[in-house]
Amino acid sequence: MASKERVRVRGSKGEVRRKTYIKEEAVKDVDIEGDSGYKEIITPAADKIGDNALEWIKSICRKGLRPILKDFAAVRKFIPPKMTTDMFNRYPAKNRYTDVMCLDKTRVILKGRPKNNDYIHANWVQLSTNRRYICTQGPLEETIEDFWWMIFKVSFNSKLKFFAYDTDD
Image (cartoon, rainbow, N blue to C red):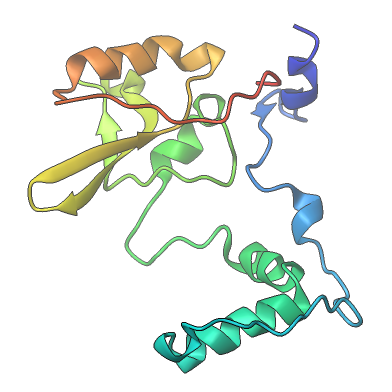
């Protein structure tokens, strides 16, 4: 498929480089002077909104989204202390994006697979004491088997998948 050539680029060591979820161009240093699109916010519920929240909203309206993207660029690769992404780093060909990390502590381990083949870019998310979910990327050509292995080997009450379909990958 010709479109995959734009997404999968061989690096200097022959590794496959993946695109990022947030485009680099969106988070480059941007001069925001004179980039004001601020318009006064008129809302009857303003008295119910915390002063800090309202000021933050006004600031966003005044400055635009570029400052948020700049802030995101500064913290996009942040990993909290005591959290590791060793498996994510070890298997780059199994990751759709380079900037959406898979944390070792909460990753889904593919049961019944050899230790060197039990990685899938998927994490358990605990929302309450009795509700756990798996968040995973859409499968790549190289990870379709892993995805279905996870679906059939992990005990679920139900399965839902929400994604934006992108024919480029």
